Image 1 (cartoon, helix red, strand yellow):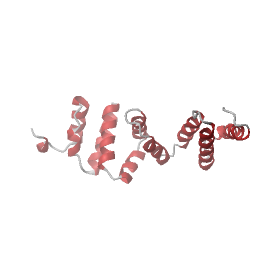
Image 2 (cartoon, helix red, strand yellow; image 1 turned 90 degrees about the vertical axis):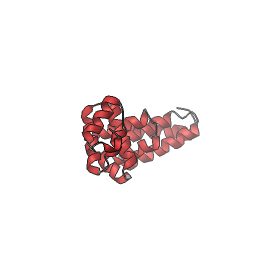
Image 3 (cartoon, rainbow, N blue to C red; image 1 turned 180 degrees about the vertical axis):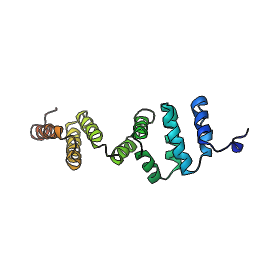
Image 4 (cartoon, rainbow, N blue to C red; image 1 turned 135 degrees about the vertical axis):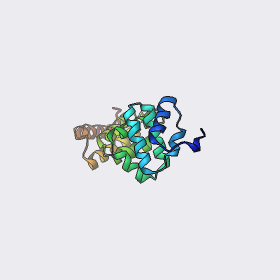
Length: 163
């Protein structure tokens, strides 16, 4: 049967995607309710590739605000999307945006901290640590690292030593 003649059915689309790795039937699900159902059904498969393809379809086919609302509605969806952004399709800016959107400040602050520590140039390390400290103070996260970061900044500023 031709694709256009198929019934627009999220369950059928997920079944074909999961069993045959064929995403074409997702595109027949155009309403917001159908897209939400696609996501719900994909999460029930517990199959990361199926979930990621559906999330990608939602990202491409929905306005950003609507996509963000759907994303925030499920921590499992957020976790799968973040994993996709770090593994399959490294997009740091989108990853940071989603962490901010979902108020995962600790994760983002720790990422900034680790990024700062890996800088080989002392001036770059100092700049990144200062940015990290501003972030930590602004979002009141990772307070246990606050004094350590200030000490490293002081050492870099006063002595120019590499930490």
